[in-house]
Image (cartoon, rainbow, N blue to C red):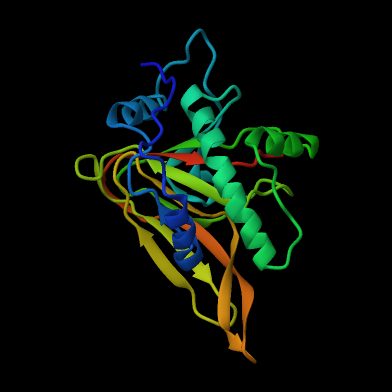
Length: 249
């Protein structure tokens, strides 16, 4: 099955709502599928499909247990990315770059990001980060992903997305996306994120700004550390597509 011209949501995503959810909770879900069931199945099938004409769509495979990352495995796509993965990366980047810029300003940082993903990738590649980072993950019964951050080098885009390719009503139980947030001098807060097939969750790669309590009539901003993982799969099989916007060194 070919993967061409991905159907982007119609009506378009409500980025005001998504930005507000990211500000308040540190995670936002699209609420509608970005990919239909047929496209999800085609992407998941790539994981074990023989390469076309001897060219694999992947550059590497990681077995999590070998590295202490959890259980399960994932494969990083090679360039050129499948058309649908490239299109999603390109389409999601600009509104996320605007949110990232606003977060940087709130934290008092001068850092900003280019308007297009192509411009940002050029910066990554100039810094020696040239390996693509979008990935396909596969979990079976008993598998899980430890809490982590997807950094890969000095160049880090602050937000990422994950799209659930399997149907939670039919294909698996358990296996929830889990995020934790560590605020200074406070215990960690956990967020469990349910998704429907084809729906995306958007969340920080490593940090986000949070408005603190008012001090002398002014509300301060401080940075909290975020990590994400996947809880233990209790039955079935679960595939997800990870969209990371910086490349790896």
